[in-house]
Length: 149
Image (cartoon, rainbow, N blue to C red; front, side, top):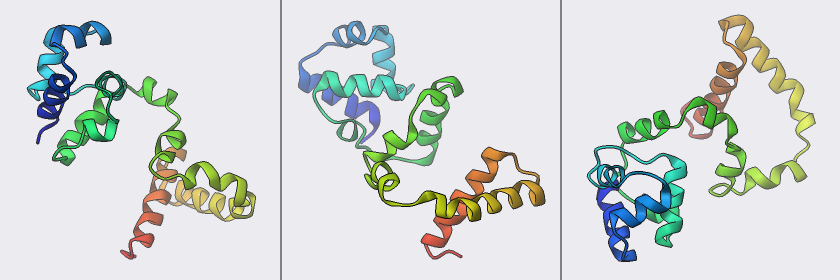
């Protein structure tokens, strides 16, 4: 099922019209129509608002056949400025609770020197900026964890 179909069904189940939803979210009725016909995608804040309005979880709302292109479209729809305001640890902690609890248990300072050295090597040897170095290290750890390295 597409996201649009999921949005349409959730709205109908809630007994709301496109006009009702548009008014409550502060968007046009045409925007709701475009979301429901998969012409465009709501951003993450709008999606959360829809889930609250329809009294379902965000996971239930977006339970559809997911593909990378749609994922990329959703990521691209959130501005860099908005992304800077998002507490990604808090967001991902809902799926992976360890992200919220490990700082109380793990002595991160014990790992900091080795991690700092790895980041420095990536910046010096490959001339990556700090953000890119962190992303390469994160991806490398994921590959090790998956047994790909």
